Length: 546
Image (cartoon, rainbow, N blue to C red; front, side, top):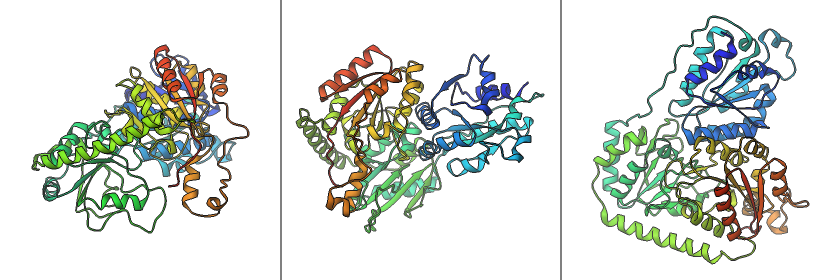
């Protein structure tokens, strides 16, 4: 068997059905194998950053191993920003890159580099295949490592001579590490005791809740405690149902604002949540000294990383939360009070959004509310709207673990291609990406892939013709920019970007919406007619200081 044939067969053993890629000369043996491959699909992207983000969206939405194939050092370099995002999201991705033939590498040929070393800071494991006999062992090791908790990307370099070689190859078999790690009994009982004594408990839900499909288990505990639930600061998922009466959405990611919220509570239970991914440094520590912390996570690195917990539990939320619930008593009066307070806040936010519905230019809050009212119940939202996103989880009904995906890593350009990956993973569900104009320009090449493969996703560009989030944060520095009202390098005008013409040039149907109502009508039309569609909405350029 040839190395190229063995590699594809090994991927199929691991349950892979799509390879995302952008080929070059060192990948030609692999592309030759695809000429007669009928089960494993090759999905072409026109730039490696877009390819990487497509695989990330697919991995997050499917929970399966995604595979990316890149072209030596420049291809890996182009993908690194989106690989960072995948690392932060814990996406199980096997990243591969073609390498020159080993007999040639001592000459340091064009495009050559030490690929495993380049990738290593952003992956769980990184290696290169040096013998054909080792190919099965290393592919299976890579897949096992990517999917083992805590999940994350891995890297494998594939020299051309390995792919071209022939030999007797034992393909061996995959290994899976069972993910349902159950928390230590003594720690569980200690956590339950703290929660039983709490007067004002608070829960922070992290991505581990959605990733372990533990919504029901966390809902049961939250209702038992009568505890409001916030998301972690930069979530990738719908870690708690948006319509649940105890859901309070996200905190403002500034230390003084976090401190004001946390000072209202005596016990914080972080279920897979980050403590804390902030936006700006501050002299104020976000964690009040008096609050007691219980921290449950699948990653031991996160436990006690920044704040020492009263109880640290290494465990999977779905396996561990029922044990904590079983050791707790009820707090029904607190539940009723918390739900009333949260309902009042949510009603006020909805009323504000409705009041802005006719404003011109379009107000992001009104747009998000209208989209939330329009979307089908099974819709999936991919969000990279950044400064236009506040309130999105309260206004758009993302209730199941696969209903919402966001940009945890912060490296912009992820949202547009991730929308493609999510749709490939969840083909039966309506999928819409809400993406800022600045973000969209990083990976707009993904639109060609959506057109070429007839991917029925909707891309809504929230277009404020600027890097508005940077304006907000520069303004918060209270420096020269604030005084002069001048924000250098943050305006996307002169000329404005014509997203409609850009999308059409890449084969995607596109329209411009001038109002909230036009936007929702176009989204409904796109879902009905199928095919990829881009909707460009010019939203208010003004920004509120942070």
